Amino acid sequence: MSSNQDHDVEISFDYADANDLSPITTIHNARILIPSLRDQIARYGPRYIATRSEKMTGQLKGRREDFEAMILSYGFRVVSPAPKLIG
Image (cartoon, rainbow, N blue to C red; front, side, top):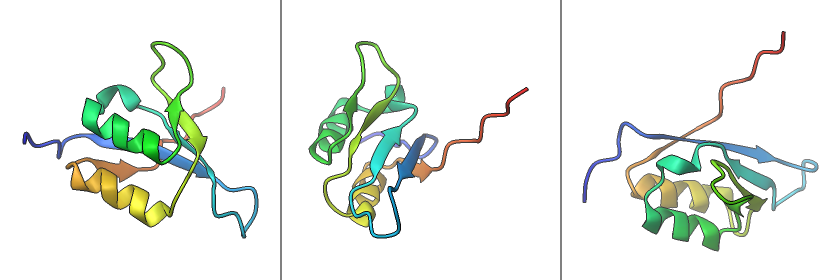
């Protein structure tokens, strides 16, 4: 398997409240993902939001720790997206 160590997967988790176990999960740069990883991510809930979209989003099924560990197992790093500056 080729190394994906240079690829950062930008993921945000939006929780409704402190007790929310299924946050809305958004992958902001899904275009860098290999097909087998996209399939695994879809099992956890996030899907492409439109044809040719760069984002996958959806309610997370399962534990966040397991989701992130699965992505790491493919050689990708999980990072928070950079904040967007307004103005």
